[in-house]
Length: 151
Image (cartoon, rainbow, N blue to C red; front, side):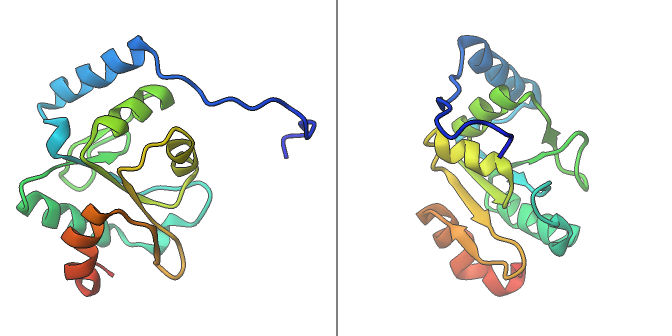
């Protein structure tokens, strides 16, 4: 892959003080509390994210908002009336790390989050819509109670 030799040294990127500062500034600019923020990542380059219609994400966002959470989409512009953010990758990693939870359609960003030990996320795998990485928050608050409503 990428025509790299198999013995190429790998490393995990580091989050800098500047990344932390930019993430904090973004939370402040959006007027939201990281401890109450749920980030929804609805797009993917790896898989056809359109298997989940925008209505799915809107219902999910509405459900979360009704429970008192701040819902933020990872998008260049506001998504269907909900706030969004689109930061450079390492600023976004820090932004996501500080959030209460991340719910993501399967994409490459999940690999980076996992490599950096960001475990406050749930990942929806395409085609069979199976949630392959769900923590207790996602299961208790959404999947267990609202699975049929959401899917």
